[in-house]
Image (cartoon, rainbow, N blue to C red; front, side, top):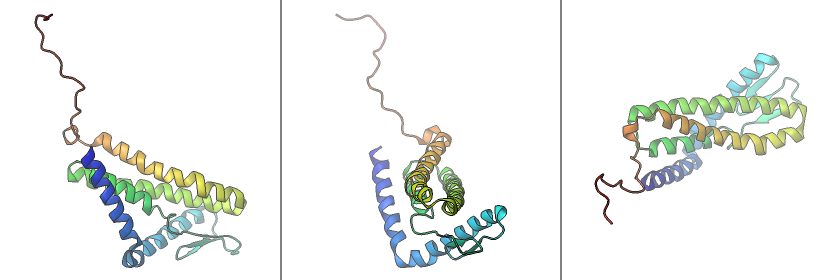
Amino acid sequence: MVRFILIFLVLLVALFVAELTGPVEHYVIVPFTSVLADVSAWVIHLFDGSTVSHGKLIQNASGTFVVSIERGCNGVEAVIILVSAILAFPAPWKHKIFGLVFGFLAIQILNVVRIVSLFYLGMWSEVWFKWFHEYLWQALIVLDALIVFLVWLRYVPTKARPAPVPAHQPRESGPALL
């Protein structure tokens, strides 16, 4: 367990630091956020044909409401937490890859739901938008990463899991000694 925690923390710090570097920001985060905005605008467009996206911005056609997907709103941090946990856990690589792919998809699907709901909340009420954005959805995205990790753990082969340490050794059967 100590090994898992140490590896998890090292990976977590390394990936968060890497996320903040210029090249990763320019070549990974910005393009990914733009794709996320396009996907979210496409979903919104299913309900409201006048929605458009430009880079990390999503706006209604009249331009009266615009949402900007900023750092921390693109789900990358939740993915980093999940990636660190899965890679730190002693499991076969095929299970890790499966967990990484489907975990990433689960987090990003929920994040698209988050962005779409915030877009409509923002058009309706700034107060509700702020509350859902700053409190509810922030916690739910991180909770999603935890739930995905726990579900993934259920499917990891038991031989890959560390054996539980018994609290005490059972006595051998035989006559009781006084």
